[in-house]
Length: 414
Image 1 (cartoon, rainbow, N blue to C red):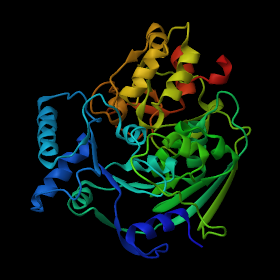
Image 2: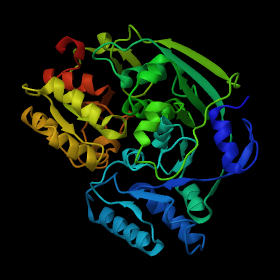
Image 3: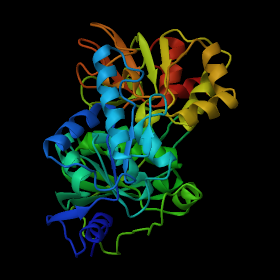
């Protein structure tokens, strides 16, 4: 019996497709950001194609190095802006609009049953809305720009069941790190992952995006939360076109199944330099930190900033703390609600919506010997600066740690 991925890819290729089949699938939406669009456009031009297959199906947000940090970046971005005009691409978000993986769901491009391809590894975020979403390289994206199609192998599917109620101070990021610890950084290589259970159903859309965003950190091709009423409510007045929700059949063929109970889960922290090098916070509490980064496509949404503000209200941070809202709309909402004022009064730095320190390109880079506690999705050596140490945590843990200047259990401050 088919899984969600098999059903979506069957629809996309126009015939019944099974795990391990190679198919040529029609893409519903394609995305490249300022970092990957440069190479994708270069390859597109080298192919000799004059016009993209459908300018309304291509989304290009500038988010990785915004505003441009040097003349080279500015020049490359100017070239892409010109290409966007030439091609008539209307779904363009310039500097400050937000991170691609927030911009697409916010603007209704991520929908159940859709095949969405992004020239970025964390494009699996859109599986939070029941889509099959995955990342590809820039040359593959050039082929999509030209034809609207992509060849791929239908992945086998892992089922992950999560039960139990997360305790106060423990959030979707902690659960996600715990799952990655148990599955392993390569435990889901080229697999689709479907998430089930009462814990998953109870997650907000923001929490589901955090979960699916990090599927690639255990090697997954995509991560999918089956669409439900929360999904449909989120998409009301937002969805770009009609969609058909896709669910796995009873008795679907899963290659593997995991079962977790998170009732007693404590906050989790990924230690340098691997995302699956995860410990409970009791093992790392007290570790000194120089910087806290709160943001990224994993944890820069309004719900995350709200949780941080609750802990920081009326207090002062002891470590330099950089906060990047995931999009302009998140920044506006956080400003109107008073969250931004709370963060500023606590001593945090508010940076423009975008990726910021996450990829180590500019803004918030750490130096040799410095330690950063980050709400992002990767802590690889050199990720935020050569020689620095990166720990990964939830927004709640990051906020509590900023107040103490060392890794701190947020439950101690609630």
